[in-house]
Image 1: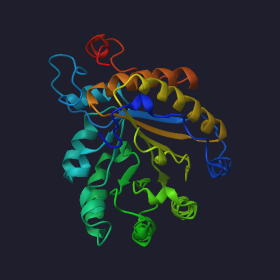
Image 2 (image 1 turned 90 degrees about the vertical axis):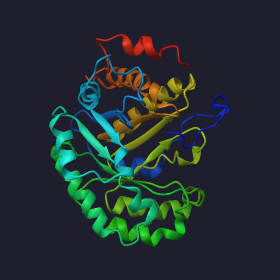
Image 3 (image 1 turned 180 degrees about the vertical axis):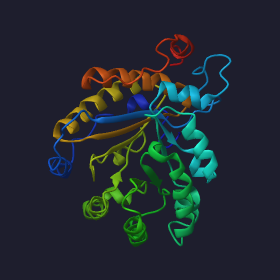
Amino acid sequence: MKFGKVDNPEQIDFTLPKTHKDTFTLLNNFKATKKPSIYVGCAKWNRADLKGFYPRGTKDELAYYAKQFNSIELNATFYRNFPAEQFEKWRLKTPENFKFFPKLGQEISHWKRLNGVEDVVNSYLYNFSNLQQKLGTIFLQLHANFGPKNFEKLQNFVESWPKETPLAVEVRHKDWFADAAITEDFCQLLEENNIANVLVDTAGRRDMMHMRLTNNEAFVRYVGANHPTDYNRLENWIHKLKEWIDAGLQNVHFFIHQNIEKESPLLATHFIKKLNSEFNLDLTLPNNSDSSLQSNQIDLF
């Protein structure tokens, strides 16, 4: 994932902004009665992208990946509407606690720009439904040129979305964040429809770190820069998530990207260790019994 890539990440101020006051107001409505539900994963399981992650001789990459992580941000569905049978196959070869978080197709978000998309959305939803209990939050990533002038299109889409199906929305046009009134209208739309507001942590677009949650879900897309600063940035996220969980947050969906994806599993492993320690969790540590990940990737920086 190269969105927001910069040449000199060490020159970026990666300090996480203060939590938006309305996030605390929202979270205070929830009472945490159990440990938070936390899912961490990469964006893909393809061997070519995650070079060095798979032991030599691995025949089924998804089956192996799903034993190392509890989730996947399924970006492949952005490029193709896979048939229902494919989702069923993926469901059957993954553990019971595994979840897929699929992206809606570019036909919906980029080509048709939310115009006349009812049939294609229904097709995606039907196919996704074959994941059954392993279907996590679906997310819609809008084109970077889809600005606030298209608010009505987004409103119609959001209000027609089936309420029983979790959805997250990511907007990228800078005008969504530049005007407080526009930002408030957007967030109110999501909050009123119980839809998550995607946070994107990437070097070149710090404006997308709005720190405004719109339901009891933090859906974070973290983009590392293949740079030592990536680790410090994740340490900051541990503190931020603790702040939100203490305030009432129950659902964390955190996906690790890199400009060069082959380092993503190593970075995710570091993050999971910190999560386990901070929140007394027992999330699986990828390749914990296999030193190959460390030996193959530790010298890449």
